[in-house]
Image 1 (cartoon, rainbow, N blue to C red):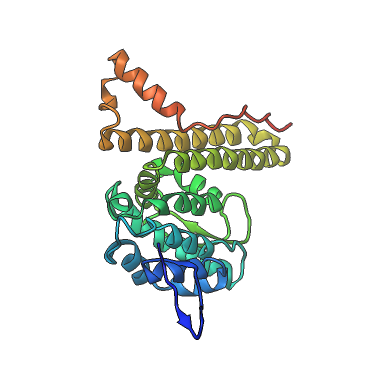
Image 2: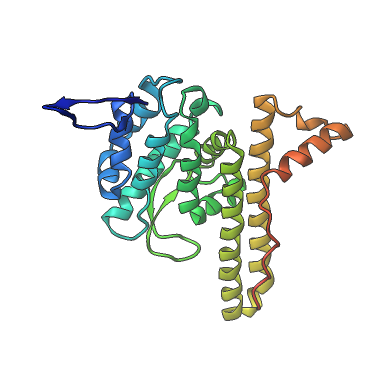
Length: 277
């Protein structure tokens, strides 16, 4: 940042620090108004691409994408069944589709690493939809990422996002460049898992004859979610050169390194009690 001092008459108009990049000031202002942020990005995937990929930034004087990340988070913060919720879901789907098609180090290499915690927060705002997608990866999942009204399994009515597995995996690989951000995603997914478990238990109370079937389906989905999160983390860390190829797990040194890496993304809280059936 630089200090701009403007004089009028006998005194300065301002001694405030202003960003070297005027768009940082713009996004900082937009981030304070969710409606303004949503209107700026919703339906304008080209703007997302320009500000995340095409526009040059200064890796020394720039803010690393912090203000842009806050604006994106504001633009995706409404979760309801109205047009605001639809706009938030549209921005989220455009963002995940863009990031999911890039290399794992895309944001970091474009001087936008500070966007990563905000991308994690955006995903965590749609944690049920993330869980729903990751728990169905063995089915092939959605063909593309797009807004969707209602959560098919939980039956909620607000706007959400139908994530394609490929877009979601690519975006998670980006987030994994920030360990705290990725850890927050893992924590949010464990929280979402509890919601899906409660839903299955509620269904089992209505249809007790299907209890085993419902709980087996939940356990299968929960396992797939954890597998996707762990596999993405390990693959990204290998690509970053932080870990050796985890296929050599017969090597105890490699196995220990992989285990230690997984521990860094697991939240430190005791498992929640299983709700009463």
